[in-house]
Length: 248
Image 1 (cartoon, rainbow, N blue to C red):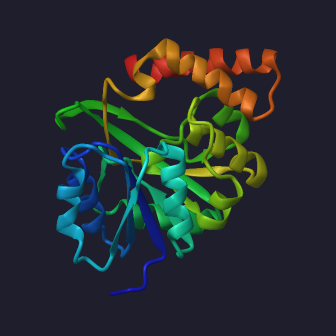
Image 2 (image 1 turned 45 degrees about the vertical axis):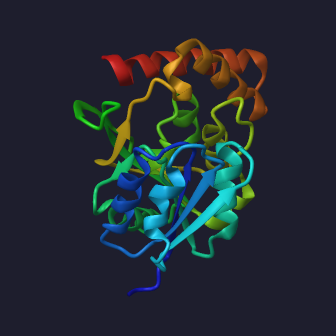
């Protein structure tokens, strides 16, 4: 097998019903990848489901003894990985088979350190909807501040860059903070505008409560160092763009 250049980090907490589909979609990729599954102190049958991968040399199983949260779990996987690139995949989402191949090619062509893909929304039970959320082919800072076009389950990022701008602040949209900081430092991210990510809608997600999500989004801009006025302005644009993306 070709030596993997990308490691896929899959954090999971009580995801026994969905994590297998996520892991299997990585194993089915057209390019080789390492997989780091970080069980964030699950209390359901997650460990039983994951035991099926114990003999797979491309899969590393990690377990947090206490619940550390999604930021710390993702970054634990990043610290364990040794490849040039990192990809993230939440335990309730999954990928098309050529996702990594197409995305790595786009990053290399553009000399980009960060990328993401379009996503097809699926219902909580995994049934695909007709709703597709696209992504610009080039995302600069002004674009990303108006709306988070970069979905975490669609991301590939250089490992050294992710260590430079680690995820933190679980009281906000922790991944969005990192993407803003990375683009501010490196100029842009690239998007592959194809439905390579199947994104499961969940009532338990941070974004499902729109008022709570708006408050967390305001904190994103403040954590990134923007003034109260600028943070309010960007938050308003974010809400408007969110309505357009999900409902129009």
